[in-house]
Image 1 (tube, rainbow, N blue to C red):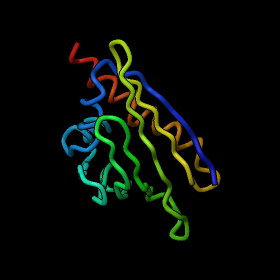
Image 2 (image 1 turned 120 degrees about the vertical axis):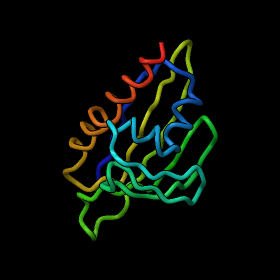
Image 3 (image 1 turned 180 degrees about the vertical axis):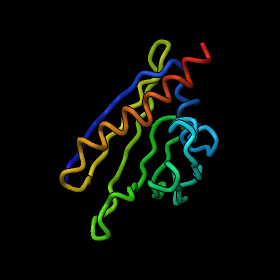
Amino acid sequence: MEKLKVSVKLHCPAKEVFTGWLNDKVHSIFTGGEKAITSPNEGGKFSVCNGSVTGTNVEIFPHKKIIQKWRSSAFEATDEDSVIELFFTFKDDYTLLTITHTNIPDGMGEDLKKEWKTKYFSHMKKHFDKKD
């Protein structure tokens, strides 16, 4: 199993990023318009990126941290779910979003790291930069 850690600075309050992650419409913007069905509740199921990623909210610490079981359609049926931990830290005039992604099937870590940066972070930066 592999693990990775990626971060992005977003020019907005942590609350906006946090609530956006758990909101269908905003999460869709975070992925460039791909369909998102989210849940704001612990134990709630989600399906994002047009259904290619599914999972469950494990723990939610309002505006601070989200832990999710996370599964890509690229995983083999025998692969366990991976786990993402999202940390939302507000500093000065920006939020540092840090994602720790663990229990990744061997050989998929680099591709997932690239996906976080191109699929999520690039769209998130555009979304929050518009608000300036």
